[in-house]
Length: 195
Ligand SMILES: [Mg+2]
Image 1 (cartoon, rainbow, N blue to C red):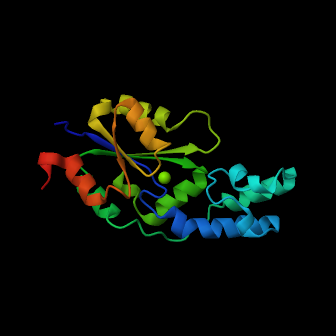
Image 2 (cartoon, helix red, strand yellow):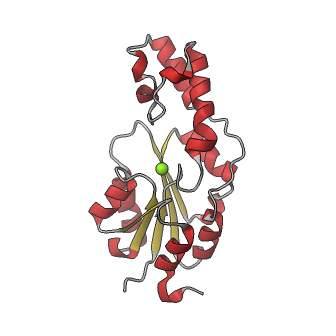
Image 3 (cartoon, helix red, strand yellow):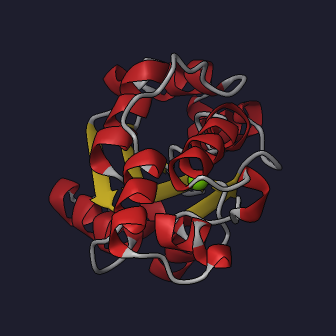
């Protein structure tokens, strides 16, 4: 059985409830900046360009206003999703713990600060939303930097088209939340070492 040495966590909708706790306000804020009803925006969008796409092309000033609203770094205090703080505390000191997230750097950093989980991680990587490349580049760099083989690393996330696909392609184990809960993740990662 593989002994895991590292775990990489996604942030949004893996450790914190972004869709439930932050998305409604972000949509309202962006709609207000544009003077439109929030129902006209695409709630599935990640980049602001995707969120406002249903409105058609926007003049540059409105596009900038939408971006400022969507990526506003003000984030309210956030509770981690159930069991996630306990999971990280259980893994801490036993595995290298990395956080890899993509988004606006200031907003992602604020989310992490607001949920209080930053001290759990050995490394935090925030990939700017507009940067070229993907999380796969960050996974490869972290593994190389710490001398961890892909099969010794697990990736925990919610997006089958992003971090989980990259994990599988690299040969890492992939655990999808919420289908796989924190207790099961701990058991799978710690195996026989589980106290
Ligand atoms: Mg996510």
